[in-house]
Image (tube, rainbow, N blue to C red; front, side, top):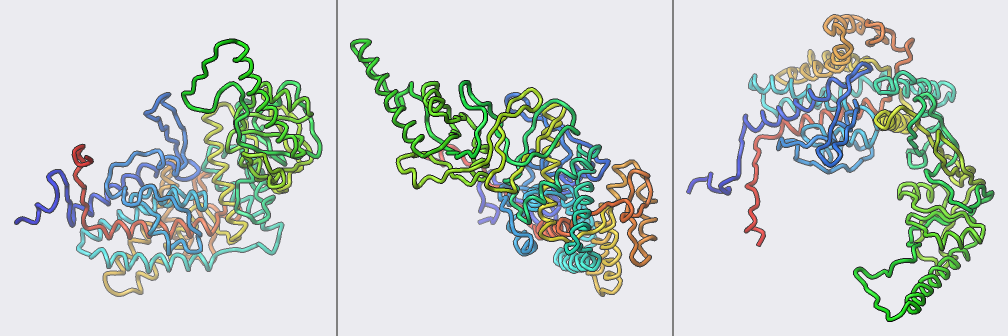
Length: 551
């Protein structure tokens, strides 16, 4: 009996060289797709959904682009959908559980964990595979290449560790480092024109967290109108709702009950129920009973001793009237994300039953008032229990601009919150890659055997990042990389690519800095991704499940 008959008729199998090439092609295609978005002069992509409304997204954020792709390459689907964020201290141990072979999931993990470097990680993984493809064609075994890549990655990480700067003990210098990192992160985004303004917003917001990496207490509200520079940071919490008619417009020393409960009176809560009556008086009795039921529920809520009630669901006119009579501010239809964050920052909990007031935890704040942003009215909670809570209000010309501004600011906030914990800083602008490439080259010269070819290939892949930055800026990358390599032969050289002047520049003078944590994550996760793909020697596509198979 032939071995090929193990699989069903429509199953497909690719072995050896064909399987490896299919994996390489999928990964390199993804890397080439996002490569043009890298660096301060990277280009944007327009993503159009195929659903109703044909929604359009304009972005150069690597993670957003890759999340939007529907990938058909089998190698790219090995671990699709596993987006568990790991602690970066065990990154290189756990990353094999998380990465997706084509780089789309490693970019998602990178985005979830450190916020930035999503494009860099995919580009580096793609370049490592491009180099590995040449080595495999030269009859070097994949396991030899993997072993060389591991040695090179360890050497590159050690090279970075020797060059890091840590100013955590000096508060003024550390804040300056954070500002430089924020501006470097934002320089490749839509906010690059106002990077000083938004860098300051991001640093101020993160410094309020006092070392926490929980960005839930930083709320971002988008309001079309004005220019990006009109964006501002506000202490406290802003809820995007209006205060109802007849409600108090200002409450001091507020006691807030955050709830997710039905506050409507005009429907019987049984699906498909009908009530048949023989007279209008009976209908009036039912209506009266419903009102009485609602009145009792409102009395239970008022018994909590509150002066502000925020509900996830609708509040109909009758209960709203009862709350207004009791001098309680009632806010309806607050979005779920809004009430979860409100409960968090005010120190309360979301309640759905009100029989035991002593078991319900209320939120507190010093002042609730209505404010205007542009033409919209919003509710402002100041003096909240979680002192580090703040709101960044983004203004801009359109929803597309605001969405991209939010993504850019999210990246900056993530990087800064991680840098507050791990305060080691490096120069940017291609400087880390050149430092790593120099050390890896030296290791290749000292290493005997075929591994030296893999180590040398790793060095070439590292240089691809500054090369891409230069290419995307329309500069002569070959000339610039040659100049950079010569500069880096000098001890303690801070040279990198200055895309503004189009030449090799001093990164210390230009204030271009990056977080060590981001660079380390890019290096290690890209290496692990390339290793995972190199290990593939067979791809089996299962036969589609037929309808009768499910019977």
